[in-house]
Image (cartoon, rainbow, N blue to C red; front, side, top):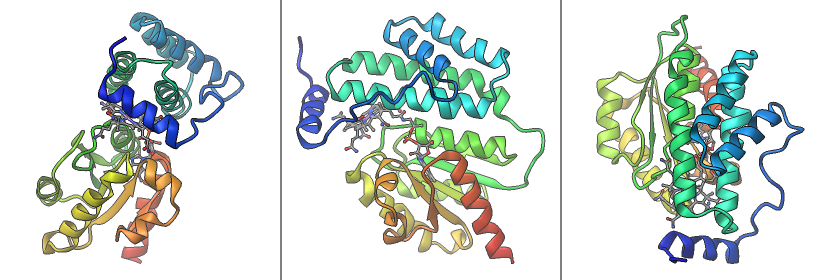
Amino acid sequence: MVTTDRDRAADELVARTHAEDASFVRREAPLGAVACSYLDALIERDRRRAVRAIREALDAGAPIKDIYVHVLQPCQYELGRRWQLRQLSVAGEHYCTAVTQMILGQLYPLVVSADRAGRRLVATAVDGNLHEIGARFVADFFEMAGWDTFYLGASTPAEHVIQEVVQRKADVLAVSAALSDQLSSVRQVITAARGDDRCRGVVVLVGGQPFRVVDDLWRQLGADGSAPSAEGAVRAAEQLLAARSA
Ligand code: B12
């Protein structure tokens, strides 16, 4: 077996941290049977079956938000757990993540809400962060709430984020980080937003794995708020904007 940098990273992580004992995908959880089928299909590299599992759940009436929260997210977390335990190769994780991104693309037409909120969001993974799906979830939940969203994907340098916030006249900037060594980039983008008059009034939200672990990390970095989930991000943004206009 070829040992790659990511294999070594998995070894280091296993040595440093304790991978969750239990799977993130549980049959007894909401939409658990769908999540199990989807995960099995991914692991068996059966993209058609994975697509079918999602399609059948939607046809049976599963709300789109539940597909995100109870199927796609736990399956992504489970891929990470299995990668960390060396039960899933780097190629396997890449394959499965690519299928999830394809599914997100297919779901997008269902995400666009007919009711428009008249608000605008720029969402991005911070400079250095190659994890795209957290920011994508956030953008899609705002879109479902009727916002116009501008999702920039992976690793966007601070100055380009700010340019986009200004040009799109964003009300909210959502910044996603996956690793603690990306926090300096988070601080950088916040500092750039605070130092630019054109961003006055823009609410800056931060989130992602490190913020799920340390409660007030967002405050330490100078953000306006955070949330552990995409749904929570919409609530936080709406509350902060309402408080500002009160
Ligand atoms: C897929 C994946 C990758 C892919 C990403 C591909 C892509 N196109 O996105 C690739 C291969 C690039 C990758 C690389 C690496 N990865 Co990786 N990766 C993952 C994995 C398996 C899934 C990520 C995902 O899709 N999550 C699903 C989304 C929906 O969840 P989420 O990001 O947590 O987002 C939710 C919330 O956090 C929140 N949220 C997120 N953003 C925001 C923003 C705001 C403003 C708010 C309010 C909320 C919010 O809402 C979201 C929805 O509920 C995770 C496992 C995991 N537990 O996440 C590991 C994981 C994050 N990776 C990890 C590691 C170590 C790495 C590497 C360092 C490995 C390496 N040595 O190469 C690199 C680092 C790359 C980099 N520079 O960023 C570790 C991090 C451990 C740690 N904390 O130290 C994890 C946790 C793996 C594990 N152990 O399970 N990875």
